[in-house]
Image (cartoon, rainbow, N blue to C red; front, side, top):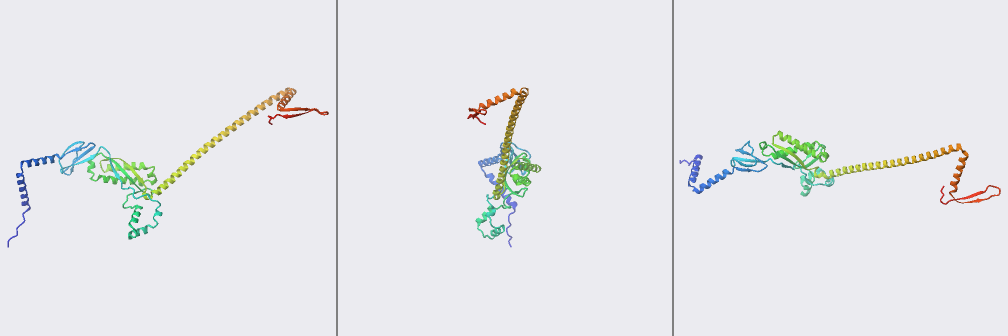
Length: 366
């Protein structure tokens, strides 16, 4: 029985390929050889790179990271795939957006008025597809899915969301490159962890108002400590709070509470201002009344002392010369009385003293 032909061995096939390549190179023309040489030269020159200002480069040669740092200028190395150039912007800060906790949905009013059914009924209807797709989307728009939507909790068990921006600068390119290939994801997770720790230690009102800058500052400091411990080769410049708010679905209720507190604060300030103005005015009026009373009292006392002094002087003169003083007082009294008389008439009488009828002057006042 004739034997079947055996397949050629792999070694023999490789020998044929090498022989064919040598024959091809031998048959190349002189021009083709020059073209081939130029291609080899261009391939060798492709290992020269330009490092831009504010950049620092590292070389990974055959998969191993080289320790030498290369600043701005020409970098002469081996062409790819022998050398891989890693570029780092060390002269300026880099920004990393943190949008995993961004607000979802829209602001709604009172959920109890919009959703008249219980959660169990809604879930049953959604599962049984008894409601239309538009209503399902409306329900999703009004709720916060803890699996799909990011958030964190505060010290008073409130849900809070927001958008942040991490600013950092690469200070050690070698350590940064040695830390891994997806440093951005690692930094984002570490930053969210630091923010969650700070927000969980405060009530939501403090995080939204008075402690807003403190939350960002302490979160950045905590992130810097972790980055230093992990040798990530970065310096955290800061964490910027773009938005920080309760979920959109309950934002209207929070705004009503804030407005009520602001109204109460305004009313308290107005009442304190009115109290101060009223007390000041009352104190001024009381001081004016007291001043007028003291002035009137001083006038009365001065007048009384003057009259008492005049009476004492007359009394002393009367004791020395009573007749003379009595006549002088009578004459002064008659002169004072007669000066106020408009007309006078003397009526004689036969058996009695004559009578005098007097008519006071029109300008006389009692």
